[in-house]
Length: 449
Image (tube, rainbow, N blue to C red; front, side, top):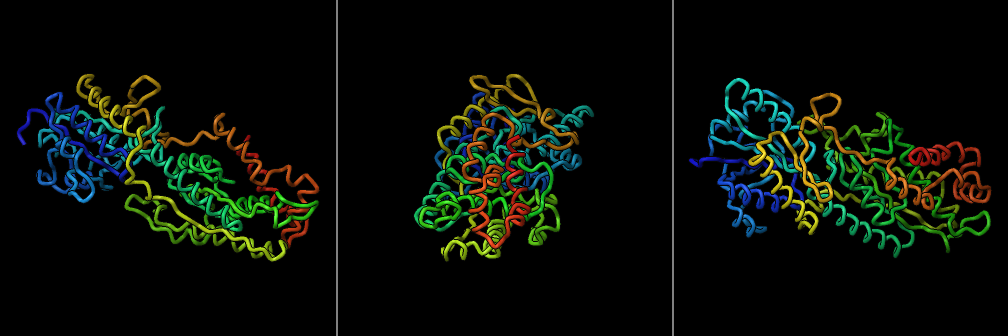
């Protein structure tokens, strides 16, 4: 490894549509400046495991662009890394400086941003001690859209469109079955961008995302929100004060963000205690069968309320599904391909021509800019704050208000005819029904405040 100038590209976290395009264009732009790009297999692992160079490879962008499934990857993702540990970050920087690297480029989402922030701080500390200089940048890849940028992150558009299409197919299946509901858990650790966008693309009856809950709630509230929507569907075809199975809406789907378990009060759902923890102490949400836990709870309540019996024996069931890793390996759509190319070009310009460090590029309309990693930190000043769905924005409020037709709202309980029809579907008295489901209707209006 005797190049005059070298850059190393590290893919961190999980795969996402557009990764290949970003690396290819990054390597091409670096080559134009006389800089050779190197990559690693399994992220930061080769750098952290030792100081030799056996885990690194030169990235040939033309060969990489022509590679396909079945070939051995030159560069691949890995979840290991120094994280927020400054001493581990310094060790990585010293290793790269010893190998002659002038640029370190990470590629990932919120978790990767935490790592790159630590590496930037470590690099500046080492530089102040006379230990050498390395510039650091990050390509914004996040199918969750959890980076606080003013533009989309690479992979999000492909993922949300694909999830929307999958949910439309599920919705069609529910419609053709006529007596089946689906509860679909969608990827999104702490933010609900994917769940919300996929829900509105597929006309979901209700969507539940972490941003809707400002404090932890009992598991029973989440269950009753779903039950309430199903009951409302049943009275949509009522005659007088009674639901009519022949005309009722007995099908539909609910979309739930996989991060919702983090919003549930401890002890109110014993199953959550079985959730595994990763090496960073975070719950392994993607591996937890929340779709089964939640759908089983809803079906149990429907049975307890004797809904099928009160509907004249017509069955009604909720089936859980999980859509998580499904789209990680999807081919990027035109939006993500263009975004990957432009952001790769912008990042090289910012690092090489503008001589910046610790930056993430973004596109805002027709303008290309950058934001410092330090500007993305939260109140603890040590970790990156996630970009949450702004549930008070006009766009979101418009969609949530439109969903009043499908979810239980206060007007359904104040209208005597609707209330009588709802109560008649259950084994509850009027007073018991109001005591139980008023909180559901009020919750929906709180979100829409």
